[in-house]
Length: 135
Length: 222
Image (tube, rainbow over all chains, first blue to last red; front, side, top):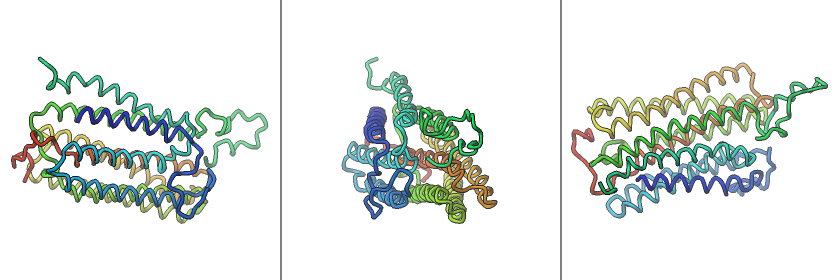
């Protein structure tokens, strides 16, 4: 559980760095539905609706994953759930909160809590990992 | 991105206001301030999540959330919160196109979504407390109630914030010239949505490892 959190945070940081910081003014990834190549200030309504559908589908898949993988693979279920959650969180931050369209400097500011969260989890490691450490 | 504070000062010849494009972050001061606020607010949630993780990892047994909490009901609440995020971006889009009627409508939908979520949380809490699963019962319940209540307070604050802006919309105060105000409101609301997405997975969905599950009825409330 604990390792999983750290892994999730690192993944989120890497995603944020490469996907968000990489091309701030690029066209949104999900913008192929009829609104081809709109400019920075253009309307993103098509993208918003696609993201909404994506988020809904992922939520349904999450609930289904819990049911389907219940007595099969615990690690598999946790991995699937966390990946889907990170995709959802990433979509909200990138599209709804417009980080995809912001300057790289602002993206770095927005990602600062990830760094501190990692420190906090590492700092709590002696407490949480006590069960597995020799006495 | 949108209307800038600088545009109100065009008639001054020696204007000290730096245009938004020339600022280090390329955003208005208000938007940058909201991002800073969200960063520190995020740390508040991180602290609670870290405490939750440490307590859960250390606990010898942990109840299965699927047996104790209404997953499908909460999935519907998640769905409503996601939809309210969508109506919020549509409100911003309407503001940027100076469509005041649509702005008022979509912001009203967002407020309704927020109120619906709060109602759902009230229903969930009253149900749980009626079953005797109060925060004092076990660390599972104390962390559950702290995390969801802290988030619920954010939703409550967001609804009040939105109602204040909505009253301004009814008076026609918001439009293309100050669409960034709607954007700042939206940032807060999407952040609340984002936290719920994480919370839904980590608190409601992920079950404890098979050897650790506790399904005693005094603990799960069933």
